[in-house]
Length: 189
Ligand code: URA
Image (tube, rainbow, N blue to C red; front, side):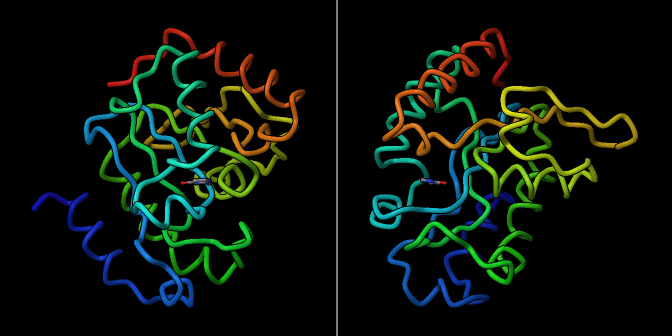
């Protein structure tokens, strides 16, 4: 079994935090194991919990549209979340993030993506901290390419607003569309 599969199996058996008690299916992530582009959301919502797959609800539908604007195929990238089990209120506690993030860290180490796209504030904060980059709010860094020259493994980090933020806000929709359109030409695998 390859290492990504091994992590999926461990997540399936995980009981490191209380979210394991209320999940239907864990959502470890999916995509091309050779992907150069990795997308990281917050955590599974209702639909994702029902299906065990990331971004299959309304936010996922919009994400598919955004990927298309960037010229990316969903099956060519790797999509996962900071937290792998259903988040009923979309607000993970620091303890839940601490318990779950070692899985994400291992996924990043295995995939060695050239580009990481954290979606929303929680994923952006986590990824910037992990790569020892000064914290920034998503409002300041969305759509920008961030690199840290001192790191051995140097993915380009391009934070984006979370696609769910646009579901009820047409203004956000246009900002997201413009940010993703700017990615056109990015190599996905
Ligand atoms: N929102 C997320 O952050 N992740 C998902 O997988 C779905 C919705």
